[in-house]
Image (cartoon, rainbow, N blue to C red; front, side, top):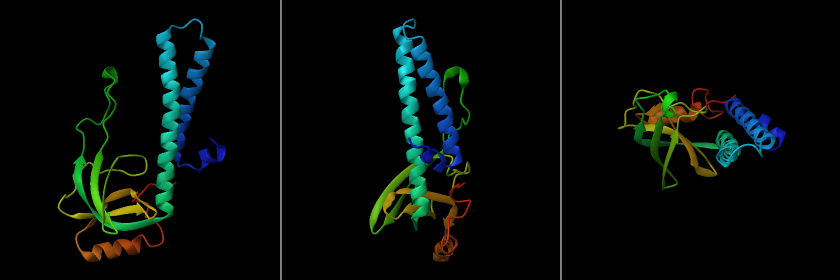
Length: 184
């Protein structure tokens, strides 16, 4: 990974990569320092931790690049929420090893008469409100022009009339508003 790539990612991604790098360094150090004295199970766990840290770092950088491409080359359309999942338990249960559940939204929209279905979990870049949206109306969808599957439905931009969509197009004409996608 080039150093420039690290500084080009957004703050939230950078923090995750730093944490994963610390875990990676500690696991590699422990594995090499104690290779002859630790048992096979611990070696396997350390290797899994090392590979997992590398994979998660790659995943976070890729997710960040997708959002950057979308921000730099976006188009707008309308879409409909198909499924909206807000889990009852927001916090993880440390003693049981259960990680915190994430909000998730599935939606569909059309680009050039092509129906596209997509879904995403709440992340650093975009928040999903805890209050269930009205599933009978349309919402603004922002997508990457060259890759329409790279998209988000913006639940804070409901479309109840054609005038709403035109007003949103005017708002997004120069740049994406701060309350649509987190940018730093």
